Length: 243
Image 1: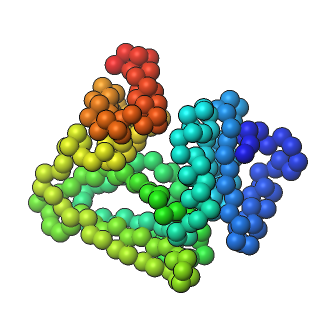
Image 2: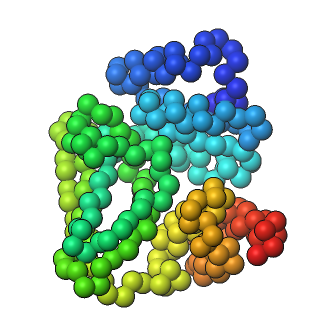
């Protein structure tokens, strides 16, 4: 638990990273929880946890502490898989263009997918990962959109396991408002981040549509404190931008 100021002891990020890598090589993961949003050195903490096979938590309110933080910590102490990597490969006969939205700090080189010396994430049994792509398909093309592969170290056997699934092509993609709750949340959060960042796609993001998408969530999901906080931030952005 830290305020992330890095102002006591050895405060040089490079030496801190080297120490954390040594811990990781000895089987000790490094997790960090940043307390308060004021003056928090978010970038350093996130970078250190990535090097330490750990997780980074931002605790900027009482709600963020109460909202499953204990469960997240418990999950971190009982990982289900280590060195988890995901790779999506698109079929050029079906896909003209594609873009991964976000995840700039977490991308690996294509050749590192099967390079087990390149470290990746740990995941607990109840955790899930999300990757969102913008894809332009070729209606006159052929075949699946592509494949998604996952590679991880099984903790029971110690062996690397790899699985692959096809991504089928559908002539009519499901409208966002008819998608699952998890897909709606991923879509809203990703597009809102693009809007705030000022990405090249920012002008195509309609904040009013994001508000409508949140409104279409199931009541028990929409009442989640994290979703409510996201909704409030979008409303604030609409007020500032006049949308």
